[in-house]
Structures are given as structure tokens and as C-alpha cells.
Length: 67
Image 1 (cartoon, rainbow, N blue to C red):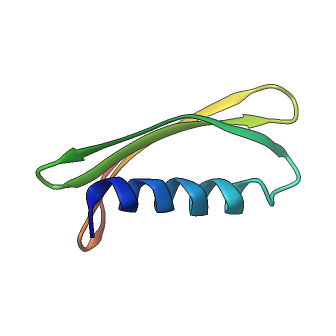
Image 2: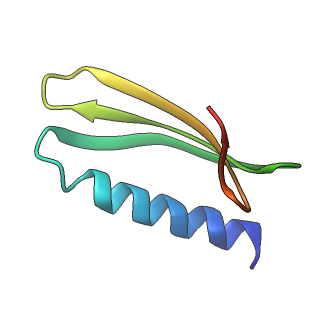
């Protein structure tokens, strides 16, 4: 599958599922870039108390490659 499609679908699925949590109000700053080991994704989650949690992962063919 094209990397752009995978990034778009991953963003949609992650965002939809995170927003189901009652303390999460927003998922923002999504970035997905192709790397040799897979797709490097990063994004921020905004909680109801306005605190922000930043995530960054490399998703490879076998799952999460590194944190």
C-alpha cells in the first residue's frame, strides 16, 4: 500500500480511538514520515485539564520498532 494511504488511515484510526476516552479532548500536530525502518509518527494529545502528552513512535512491519 502507498505510504500516504497508510499514514492517513493510521491517523484516522488513532485519532478516532483516542477521542473515545473521556479525558482526551484533542489529538493534534500529527506527523507521519517514511523512514527506512517504517513509518515515524508523532502527535500530541490534549487532556481535559489542558495538559499535553507528546507521542513519537516508529511503526515497522513487525509493529513498534522504537520509542
